[in-house]
Image (tube, rainbow, N blue to C red):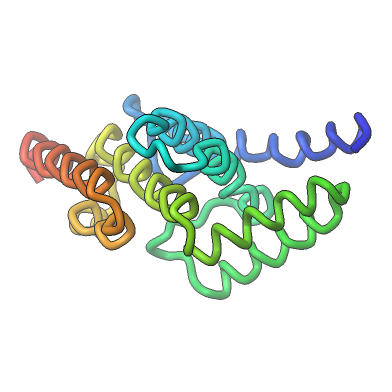
Length: 188
């Protein structure tokens, strides 16, 4: 890859800084997809000692790239995203990945294939962290920014995704405690 190709990849990825997500920050500011991806990646890095047999660098890479398709489609909340939306996003992402220099295209394609298959522990951890970060962010955001369906969703979401791991299941339970406390304190 030459320097220009490298810059072009970064220019596309920069779009995620301006791509708003459904959730807000603690202060009520709409967060960007880039901010979400950064924290999911941080979460993976911090688990290095909890999952010593995991290829943590691979998980971090998965977390860094997992929402690159939203450079082309924007963010659509999981609870309204349709199969058609997923197909469009996947198709545009695939076209872009195939247009990249061969070594980068090959690396990214392999990661996306593993992420989609959800067969390896690395892929399962990435997926769990992606969902858990959204729940954590909701707990940090003002309750008046939640949509009506999120009160119940925040109580049930992602338990199936973390079931493969006792540690992640415990984390999900702690997040639920925070959710219930937030709802009770803020009177909904």
